[in-house]
Amino acid sequence: QSVLTQPPSVSGAPGQRVTISCTGSSSNIGVGYDVHWYQQLPGTAPKLLIYGDTKRPSGVPDRFSGSKSGTSASLAITGLQAEDEADYYCQCFDTSLRGSVFGGGTKLTVL
Amino acid sequence: QVQLVESGGGVVQPGGSLRLSCAASGFTFNIFSMHWVRQAPGKGLEWLTVISRDGSNKYYADSVKGRFTISRDISKNTLYLQMNSLRTDDTGVYYCARAKSGTWNGMDVWGQGTTLTVSS
Image (cartoon, helix red, strand yellow):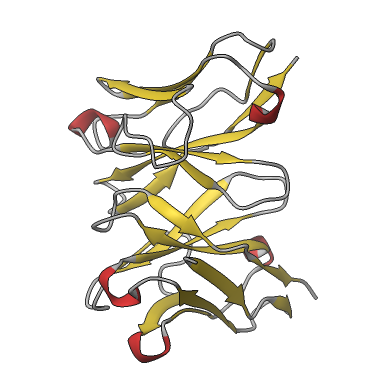
């Protein structure tokens, strides 16, 4: 059971918009620590998708966006494509644990 | 190109020890904090530990505190993870990753992972 809670799965049809939530607490997201998002394609290492809540590394399409409010953060993917089918993880620093934590991960299925 | 390559994984009996290595290339190793992250079979990502640029600060997840030790050799551009008192639940793929900036600002470069199996 992770400190950051994500839905186990989400799905959407090509071209649609989906969001993935990441719910934390007053010891991580709620105190303002940055949230980062990763995409992990099957059989590969994770890839940084969003950092600092809303920033995209070079090369990440602007179809991916991040937001944060209170003790939660969200990853939005617009114009869904078959290649977006992957596992997505949020990550944040936790003051109680004095370390980083990942969400449990969300499997995105493109219908 | 910027690259991290892990090595040292294998099969170890419970209670045993192993040291993982992560060779960095294509960037100035000593100006980045470095992390280890693992993934148990069919499970999610678990952050394990981080070391600061100069190696003076280290942080560990409770699950490995007292058993695992992170270190780095600037002269060899290499990150290490010494793992002692291994348990079956330490089985998984171990990734090293570069902190984008500072220590907690996301991990922007990842290795391909090395697999550890703890089994009798």
